[in-house]
Image 1 (cartoon, helix red, strand yellow):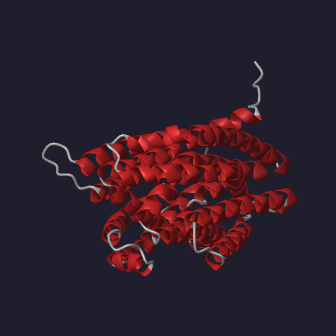
Image 2: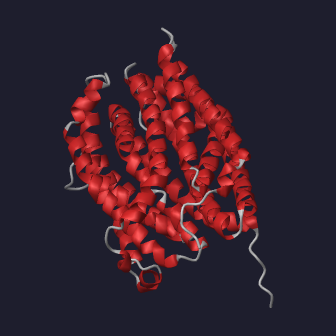
Image 3: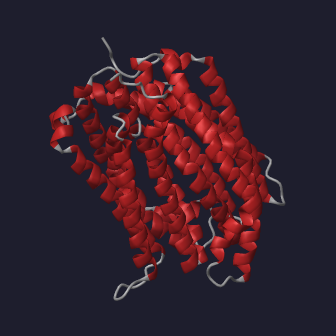
Length: 453
């Protein structure tokens, strides 16, 4: 019986869907985490938004570097160099351990960090406590990012899906218990939410570490045999990963600067923004799964089958992204009020009602840029998969700096909240245009991140 080759659509779906479910699980957990804090105390939700954003900004540089393990491993697989995988993973672990002390140090100055940004005095203690506790999960998050790259790079994406689902369940259970209390356990509010996040991050890291020690994987990919620091491999990871990490830092820093600026307008604008961003994240984060899939597929096919095969996979990924984001666009435009009713499960006060009214308008901004966001995310993943990481960094740096500069330079004296949402929309749409032009230009087709014979 003749074996039929896998169709491009089926291949993309096989790799991408588990990653979409995995990242989607994270978005649901993040959404529920903040929503539970709203039910507990509206100020806690606002504080978690700011504290969580700053936590991500602090970690996104090494996380961006470590996230490149999946793309590099996919090229090793395409070149039939499976024995090189173990030592690459170990470089990721050593890098995670090396930078961890800096994050514990950041936790000790948390209150000063938020005070310098001009946040309202009632939010600063909550923001600082949330941020400080999250720092205990920084090492776990770095290690699980590095190790998960093995499963995406070798196209074992279902493993990532199941680990993410289990971790998400652990997080939601711990959130329910630690935020509101249960039996003899007191309610800890925002502190409990932070502890739940830390434990779930370490849970994921331990799951991946255990799976990698199984004989079928460890022997084939020389997991234990790769133990030790390898300067050449580490330098290559840093060369291609550093611009990816710096890109994350630039984008996240710009977004956080916007959120912190909105936070200076008071709790109500920040709470409304958090509501809208929560639903934006539910739609956006699953697209990260498509971006990772594009990166992995481009990395493998560029080496094994040439650029034409890689382009086909990227086009299919963009088609899936368009269908997915179109569904959310319709939901935001026509069912925004129904979505935001989710925040009214508790007896609403006047501030909560007003926050929902503002958030409904903000969702229209999200509908304006969501499809552009899908395109730029998928194409950025594809370019990184080829090794075009320095251009992605330059594009992100230029557009981010321009957006923040324009935002502060021309901020009006009235309606500042909506002004910053216009800035955010223009930033994302411009970035999408830049990524389209680079992808069409095609220089990425001649790149690779590994040595081949």
